Length: 84
Image (cartoon, rainbow, N blue to C red; front, side, top):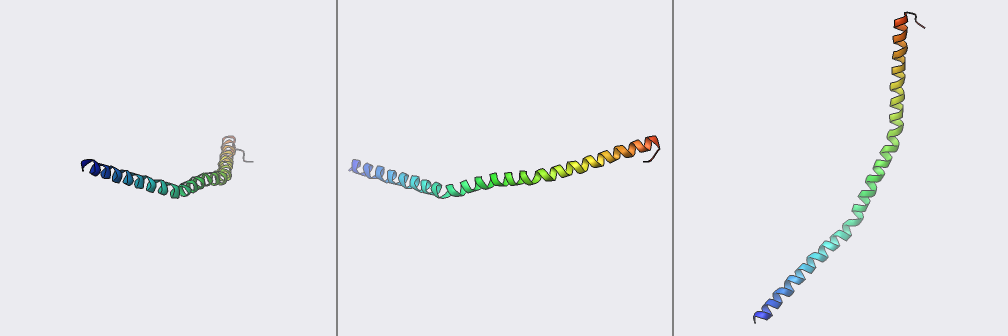
């Protein structure tokens, strides 16, 4: 009687462990495409932001340098007191 009861308990625990494992495997299989899509989306997002931010950064640097160059000319004109 004890062995039969022990065997039933062992079978029940094994079935429960198998059910939990198959549930986790199914959940992982179903969620894998979404994880993959999220990874692809984040990479595409980074690439797009990088591509679009480069011209903006270049325009900003050109604008800042032109202002800096103009300030040098104004400073030289002020020091020489002859305005071009």
